[in-house]
Image (cartoon, rainbow, N blue to C red; front, side, top):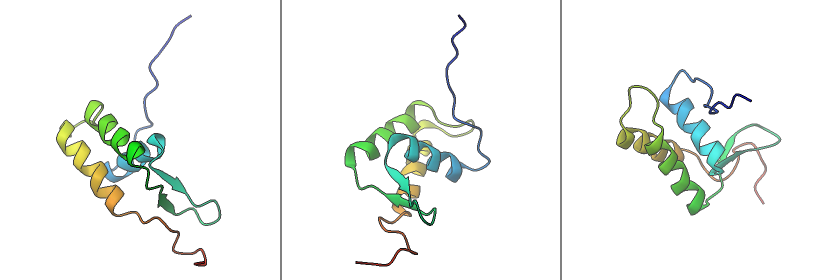
Length: 87
């Protein structure tokens, strides 16, 4: 049986790539009702996403630049959905 390594789907932007890494690591999740990305505020998932970015950066980015992109995208995502009513 032939085994292959699963790779993330190709994305057109580094921001899209970073969102994919954050989502796979469980650092962000999608609002089920509106589709906005929300920060889960899980420090372990955040660090895991940064580690993944360093270990497997997209073509053209250094490991440090990839980690920085993940951190910048995470900083731009809030922990609430802008369309959900606040409690």
